[in-house]
Image 1 (cartoon, one colour):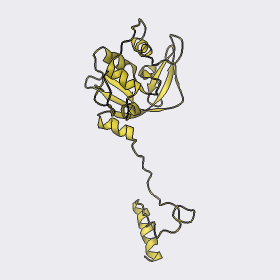
Image 2 (spheres, one colour):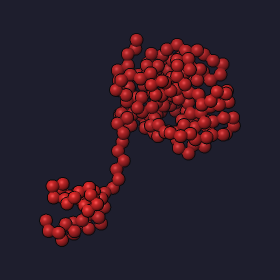
Image 3 (spheres, rainbow, N blue to C red):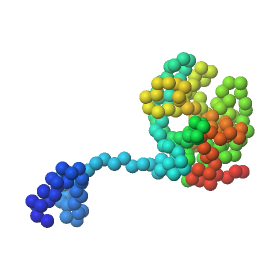
Image 4 (cartoon, one colour):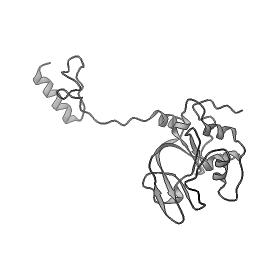
Length: 202
């Protein structure tokens, strides 16, 4: 193709918003400062964990941790996590780490959900007590007024932060969803058959 034709095609492509990718065998110095990579729209790919979440009927969301204390105080913390949220027709929800749901092998959170181990009850927050009783943690401090959870970015209402039980292998699941499931109540969705890995029941 003549140089003038290549230039004309490139101009038309830019005007129409499409990218022209030259044949790698004929493109001069592709990837270098002379040739450079082909221009085009930036595409955000869906992670494999988010894709598995969606396949199971959930919605993948990026959530960040928040520290909460007495009143309406809420402090965003560092880090973020891709969570998978399931919402039932009655409005109940359950949240689980997208990587926990899509893991190729069983995780401690998945085992806790499927096996329903016995844990202590507490006059305080029963979901936190149950989580701690099966060797997880959902605590954001060591005082009774310390609290926290995971929510969307720029969250202002501390009551919307969902507590999550995290285990030693890094797997995480909704603390209330775990506690309710132990008592035979399904919130959001029954995750038993939604894990990618086969979870042994014994």
